[in-house]
Image: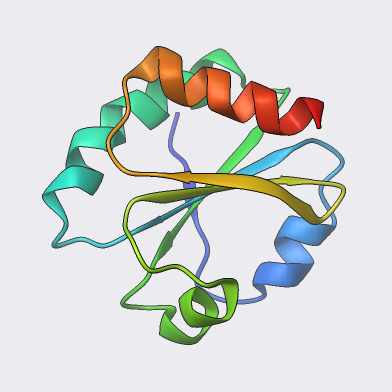
Length: 107
């Protein structure tokens, strides 16, 4: 399944989705981001048609990462109706990341 990489028009892409959106801010040089890659792919596959997943490379989109306030990678930002409902950072077990996303979407 591949997760789309956003390089521009972020607000338009994320803001117009009818489903919840999870955006992973990552860096290609980050070993922790690499560790999360298969975890995120499995969750995205499981929730296909319910949640939309995107990735943003903080080195390509520095201004956006600064605007959102990303200081640690990986950071997962969860959106509902174009608004941030929460975020979580770091290497997490698959079950933990999935549960945190669900909790943020319940708020």
